[in-house]
Structure formats: C-alpha cells, structure tokens
Length: 259
Image (cartoon, rainbow, N blue to C red; front, top):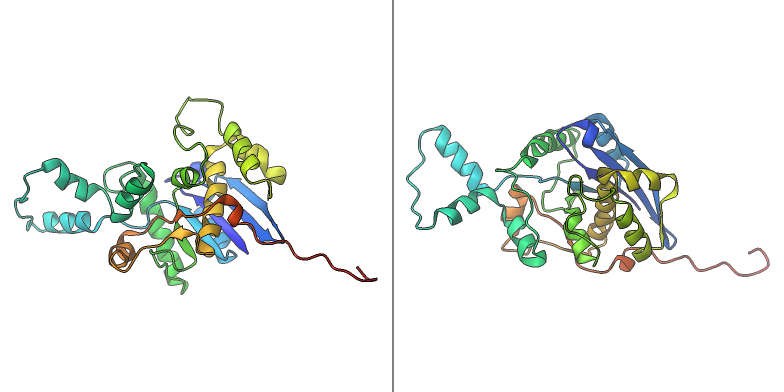
C-alpha cells in the first residue's frame, strides 16, 4: 500500500507532501517534499492508494446557510439566548466538536480562522479530482480522508501540544525522535533531515501514517446519524488503535534448498 500525506497551506512554500510505502512488516518514507504546487499534489494523489489531507474538506452547514441567507437579505433575527453558542455553531463543524470531545483539542475554525485560505485551495483541488472522475467522499470512504496530525499524535500517546508554536523550540526534531522510538518499523531514509527542520514536512508524514489508519479501518468513522453532516462538512479521521497496529505483517521466511 502507498499512502500520501498532504500538509496543505494557502501557499506552495508552506505546503508539504510525504509518500509512505507499507509492506512486509515495514513502512518506508519514499518521498518528502516542501514547496509543493497544486499540479504536484494532484499527480501524487493519482499514484496513492489512500491520501491523508491535513485541511478541512468543507464548511459548517450552519455557516453556509447563514452566508447565503445574509447575501440575499433573508437572514432572520437569531432566536438565541446564548450568542456565544450561536456563533460557535457557525464556526465549528460537527467533526470539530467530535474531535474536541474525544481529544480535548480544538481544531481551527474553517469559517472564522486563517485556515480558511488553505480550505479555499483544498476546494479547488477537490474540484480538479472530481473533474478527472475521482470525486472525493468527504466522509473519508474514498481515496482522500481528512486528517488532523495533532489529534493523531494525541491518540498515539505522543507529544501533541505546542510542538508547532512559532519560536518555541528547535523544530520538530525531538518529536521525530519520539515517533521513531514509538514506530521502529518506520524507515526515514534521506528524508529525516527535512522532517527534523520542517514542521510542515513532519506533519505530512503524520498525515500519511493517519491515512494508513483510515485505509485499514483503524479510525473513528461517522455513524449513521453523523454521515449526512460529514458528507458536506468533511470528517476528521481520528485513529482508534496503536501505532504498531498499522504496520503490515512481515512475510514468512522461505524455506527449502532454494531459499
């Protein structure tokens, strides 16, 4: 299996991808690149079995309805007694609230934070895939699944808070060490240096690993009552098992005189 992780930013310079091959008891980082264009992302998706995309795949349904109504002058006076709760429903998707409940982490709001700029780019990428006959199921059942590296780290019992704080620390090097110790079956090869100095490249590797979890059913999927919202808003695939459960079993050694 080949998984692709995409740490998507609004600009190419902060966008990273990582390709991981899974076979015979090991996972190998085959590629890790920073400064990636839309064309390069689409080309990489074409070659992947599963893609972990670190970016919201949609907007809150309540926010979309709010904007349409406001645009056409049909916005009724909000019937709320708690303004903060009403605004929260506009800012966060169902999946964001599930992540908060499951991990204690609060994803950035795609409708009220700067991550919306990356989401604009994401929407254009998904439109390109659909035009090629590969529409994206925002629930994660297709080739692309939405991932959240910090939440994945939390689920795997690794450091997950503050590791991307600007000016804090010397980069993700210590977390590379932590992940390498927790996943000794992961071969970094020549891409380790980039992952030690670039948070974006490191997150792309995490996204590729989370994509593997989604591909083999080791993530929290939307239930029947959540799927309608997930199909339009997107759904963050939270890992449900341990890191070691992701590596494929090693092939049995051959025996006999020709071994």
